[in-house]
Image 1 (cartoon, rainbow, N blue to C red):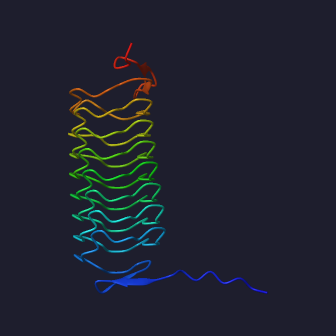
Image 2: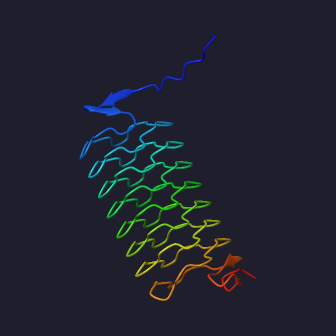
Length: 190
């Protein structure tokens, strides 16, 4: 007896939700796409604001200038995805895999990155103002001209990152592993 693994597919606003789909600029706002496989998809300029993409697989996809504001991306695999200029403000990226993703100039203001893996990601020029990055992993992440104002970096790992041109005003460091592997507890409440 052979087991068949057929992925359930749905069509939303003319966009077939599947691997390698081409749905540039489509409106998928508020759509429940939980556990979908959009690997290799072209969703550049798409409106995914408020969408539920939790536990999805969206690897090697094109989300350039996509609107993911307020989207639920918790536990989603976004590794090696292109998100230049994407709006991820207020998005839930808790425990998401963003390793090797490209997010230059992305808006991550007030995003939840708790426990996310951002290793080897490109966050050049990104704005993470007020983001929750508790326990997030930023190993060898590019932070050139990145705004980390008021970001909570409690128990985050920053090994191998270069923070010299990064805005760190009001950032919280507590049990934070710094680029040189030292531990910064300067923001721990006493």
